[in-house]
Image (cartoon, rainbow, N blue to C red; front, top):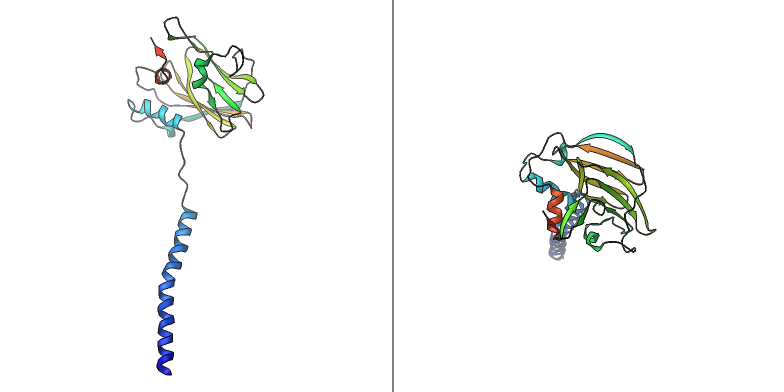
Amino acid sequence: MKGFNFLLLLLLFSCEKKENPVLEKDTRDYEVNRTAPTKPVDSLVLNDWFQYYHNENPDFSPEKFVLQQTSPISYTETSVIILNQKGFNEIYKPFLIFNESKDHYLDLDSYQWFLGPDGSASFEADQQVVLVDYKNKKAEQIAFFGPSYWIENAYWKGDSVAVLLGNSYEKVPFKMEYNFKKGRVKNYKYPDTLKFEKPYSKFKLEKKGIKIN
């Protein structure tokens, strides 16, 4: 009888040793997955813009931009035609930048360039940046630039924050972060000049099949 009890205890102890490692592994894996930091996902637009200039400027870095000022967003009227309204030129459709919900978009191009008789882009001296409330068919200008400054591309952070990526005649890039929910815009400037022959804005058009003289 004592032998039987001894064998029973050995059997129970053996089963317990086999089960515990599985339980420990499951718990450990769950804790690792639950507490692992989430790696931020950069915008493809931002990555493309930085990579373009980084090729000739190895020190070009998003961390070097310096906040210059924060100011209220200024909304003004615009004559830019909204997508799917009469008179909208379909050539600009691939360049419209929608937010996540697809109910607002940015138009950087309609006012700045048009196709000439030879099929190449001709540029105006000035540029409007237009915010379009696509759901309510309403367009407003949120920025205006003369020939010395221009916005090259933009992207959204969710639905209410948009970031404009710009450059200048002096080859000093800048960016502007619009928070439409708070009604504020932050202006950042790069502390150095860049080296490049062709600005990203023209490279972007060529990637979409637009000819540049």
